[in-house]
Length: 286
Image (spheres, rainbow, N blue to C red):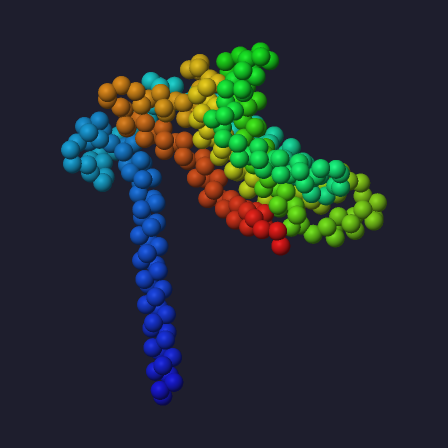
């Protein structure tokens, strides 16, 4: 009888601790999500509500005018298309080149292989504020005009070192037995890469693509320096150009921020299992 009571007491203590942890996690979750909630709510408020001394947690009436003005007055649609084009092209190209580079660095034996991998990590750690002036001079020197192709040329300097660094650790954890067995059966190096390595490495490749896409989607410094044309600007430039003057159009600004956050949120929502699996395997050499 006493053992049953002791077991019940331990179970109650365990449940009580779980409830405490749930409350703590809920508190931090609310703190993390509240800015997103406030951004979305503000995008549906009227000008008077936004500048009211006593802010409301819900709009008195949902106003779609902020979203309409965003596209009609501020040309947000063109900026959205530019950011999407640049992010997809750079992320796809960087992921493809980085996958091949990381695989060859990991699997092939050649001089200074470790030094090259270390150099790639150093390149990733170089601050962007050091590189944007040389890159601006470079794109001007080769004759690239004031358009988004400047960003397509310069963004790989950010994404490729990061992608190679992550994928090197990922490939180091992949078993080589399947590749050796395929080589014994007469498969070429390229056949091994396309039919064995790529399918097995899909979680790591997918997570790398997503992070490259996010880096390009939210990048500001290079876009600010490289692009001056209104028709060629990206989302972050379109949003920053709205925050000028004494009276900031917070409604349209929050509407633009909500739209710009939507693609990244959708990608991470539906592909979270690939991100967790890819980064977990690529984080520690086991």
